[in-house]
Length: 322
Image 1: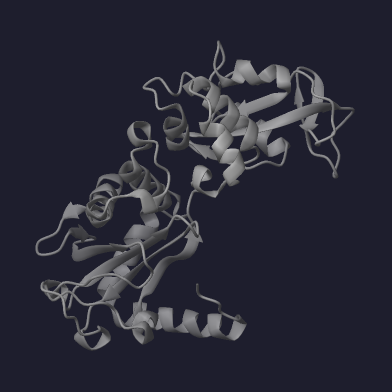
Image 2 (image 1 turned 60 degrees about the horizontal axis):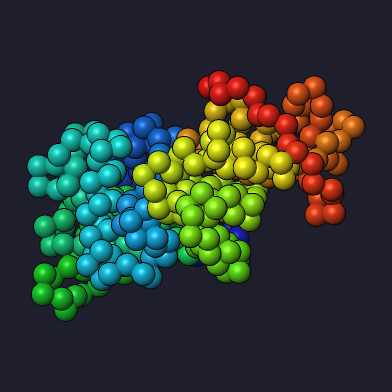
């Protein structure tokens, strides 16, 4: 989306620094948000959860933005605004959506980069511009001081305007083109996805999900969408859930417990974040090595299985310690 070479990156960095120097309020708001979320993980989680909230997979089975009704897509901006305020506990604004560090800030979301609709009452104020694209698995958030000369003229009834492409360099990016938590169902192979949804039983569908979406972070909302049952989390655990059902086939399903996260890290897999799972088929090896990372479980070393490895029962995961 923003293909910069080294020279243009340096130029952008200088321009961003000048924006902060020229606008003390922008600097204060920027510093406050970054202090609340240094890595952007909280912000990204809000966007992931908002998209999933709109899809409502537990009830509808949907996983694709294109299947939303027009009214639902229109409602996305309001939900992003509400959910960000809940997560970061921003105060209500006086004339804009929020007060951040004592400064009025409006919030605008667009699923299309550059499509933020700026209302006339935001003129002169700071706007928090947010973009997320489930197909690209990317998101951005930045601050812009709204000036009339930086906006396109509009023909819509409510007189909302968009930011001119040549003036997007006036946006101070808090996070730009960052990674959005993956919508696994949207991005998995269509044949695999069809096999996941083929069984009538929610438990069988979840078993197939963890067989076919290995080595990827699988969020709670993906589990909810596939299971379409109120007790969906119970269906993942042992005692009849996916863990016990798939162990004989050699599968480990790691959750967000610290002991599970250590196993994932030892196997050089994505480490599950809060509310996430990672599945993998494993096989016993003699020892860990640089070419084949392994985890020590039940006194034996286990590595990610290769396609031609003979299936064997997986070991028990460590106890659920955080």
